[in-house]
Length: 422
Image (tube, rainbow, N blue to C red):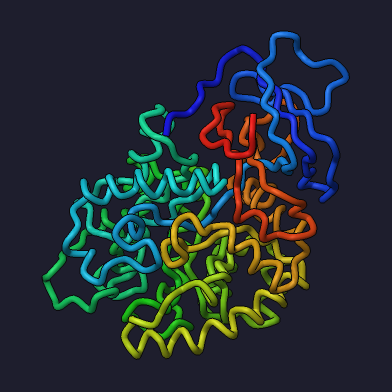
């Protein structure tokens, strides 16, 4: 795939409609002027005379979508339908993982997701922050992919959900892991782990605060880091200006994270009504990854993990409905490759199924995700913002599933996909 190159010459996108994701309003027709990497004008009275015009036809223009929980280094080419191969943790070296990530990055971009958070390496790397390097390579134009907010290594206690040895039940000493690779116990080690990720380019910190579903760690609801360790992590990250995202299914772990100042809860499956109210009060974001309930193929998982999924997923759907009704700030995230790379937009369907309007789901994948990232240069179609623009058939404010059929992708003013016309 060869992308067009953004130049100083204007490009005019003509389409049937565009959506203001802040208000949820659909405007027709759509005329968007792009110059260089930015949107210059929307529905201008006079169009530039030197413009290249792309007639995209009966489609709706949207800002590029965002996935706030993804792991580009696992899943993909060899396992396109779900979880990675069982022994990938000890079979695949960092070079092979990075090559795989280039394929998954391209797939994600062509699905209409122009910004993602790579939320925590959970593999042995020798201390290299592979996602930071992937971000650099994409930004330099070496290959196509979304913008990446990199978390470096997920920080987890020994035996925690994001301890890489816990996914395959490895015996002792099979895969030794260092503090630099995210295995950290006690206040001193968690500070060390956070500082290491920051030193080598992490843009946010990911931690494991409770048990998980697809690992042989503790029960999903069990708090894994102490209150003191959680406070130390957030203190180190916030002093450096970085946000903290916490994997947390269990109510106790979620509450401890909120009290420690964690910025974002991933999953939040077992949160009580009182904890949901705390999230609203503190302004804590939630990335529910709710399509996992339907999209994660657990048929080949060990019986103990299937049992956890059967327990957690129905409760997670109910919890998300309560969080939506309560007004929690909810951003879109898939946990891909648990949901296959490229199927990211199915999370928007899940958000609607649990109680959002289609317009709210679009907001979760655009303006709310931009808020979570702390960026103001994207997430809407407006003059002066980055020209991250996608096109889908029909009207996504009425039928959210059309976001699964992306016909046009522009990022930074360069066209990466166009099956709509023009």
